[in-house]
Length: 332
Image: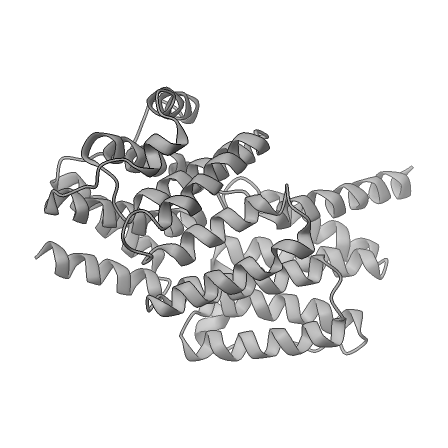
């Protein structure tokens, strides 16, 4: 029965019914006697550091394998929670990563163990411990080849690459998301395939790719996302494409289905992306009122979306800083 419930949770997550998938996962874990919480994020991070401190990287890479079937399935539920919580419940992400690492060190490594290490590294990096976070995402990527399965490779590569972009040359990291896309497709995970595709397009934009080529990449990715019913990412890709269109003088409006329209006005991650893209384009073309309106709305979503570190955060901080300077200067 647990196998069936896990497949149901996967189906919900793949169709981006994230809240339902998270609720089901937490309910199953509770019935298995596992609660995902702690006194505070700081306490959770410190406890994770204490757990990992006795082990060298080689110790973890050669750690015993998990064999308990119930525990292996519980780990799968924990792994499935991470991406959904990253978008819907970002403050809970470190707690799940901690639980994955705790169970791995107690019962052995499973295919989900690299997921926990990747999110833990991402959280450390988001708290400005970039070098330490980089260390753990590299360890997570190395562990993928040691646990006997790459079913979570698409997610680990996605999270790890976003941290790597803060350390390695941006252009040198562009290929990683292609690897993440291929790994996700190989395991049948359409949602992670689309997420890696979206991240690759965003990285190419930040790296200064030709705008006409960017427009074509967006169009192809939007079509693929629609075919795979990955509507949240599809709407965000449409937002990026509209920005690119404005920059090349087309200013095309996105055509939303009724479902896409609902997502565009109700999903926090999508709304934050929309307000940033609109503020950015308005700033570039010096539309003061529209810039101010959208940057204020963007900041309203800042603490409730995306619990992991992404390269886009650096770009957004840069441009919101420029916008803030422009607004203050204009008001004076």
